[in-house]
Length: 377
Ligand code: MG
Ligand code: ZN
Image (cartoon, rainbow, N blue to C red; front, side, top):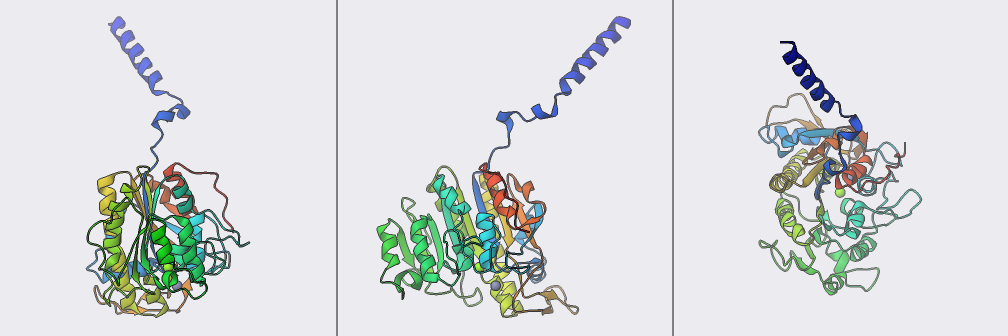
């Protein structure tokens, strides 16, 4: 009947009209993707694609890293040249700037930069730093300290006193309590500031959560902690402890940086076993981060390396679980480094970008993005 077909045409027209909403109104202010609450940022020092591959093929072809749905690559070069060191690499992640090799949280003009960890602390987030090296070593240091040269360990330790990090786990106790450059006892000063302070000499790594009313420091060694093979085993436990502890320190959210520090040292010493053992330990920390993020639903997990170390190759003659590893250098190389992301806003991390962009992407995910400053070319 003509009447019916007219009615049908009208209904279809109305439906089409309803669907033709202009693009700009598709995302209403109320519907904008929710900022992520927590970020767990895991850095494998010296962890390039060969290190990941060597660990994978030495571990029955299984890694926790395989569970990440989004993967990208960053360009790790620094302001010093195509090969970065860990200080410039960590400063790029922490502050979003390319700087010179050796700089701890400072620009090429040796001006201190405002790190993502400092900013989040100021915004009321809880913060945590975990490393399997000393806590004053370049990678963790760049998130809270500002020193022109990375080996100023005592000065870096003093910077920790100003940073109010909620959770600190790593080696380097001697730079706090047996300082040569001044008479300060930073171990005592941390206590005076309200920290629960403990160390490997006093007790085993805590099996129970320290009281969340106080910030917490645990020194895992006097200088550098042992290698995994020699008995160090706290990195996954510390990660697990941190994700229980930090949410109790702030309702706003937390930022946790976990470093697998000694993968790099396997590259420097051209020791394939060391690379693989340290990689697998780091992968266990990644597992703990993922476990928390899956349950929590408001946590972004980002995993990357600062650079590749050793020019590692998996040579002909290799078989699954029996690799012929070779190195081209005892330094770092310039190869791009993979980035793995899981959780809300993970898609931001796909593609190829500067290492400095990781800082901006994390801030964007947190909903505190400012104008991205184009990176130094
Ligand atoms: Mg490091
Ligand atoms: Zn290195």
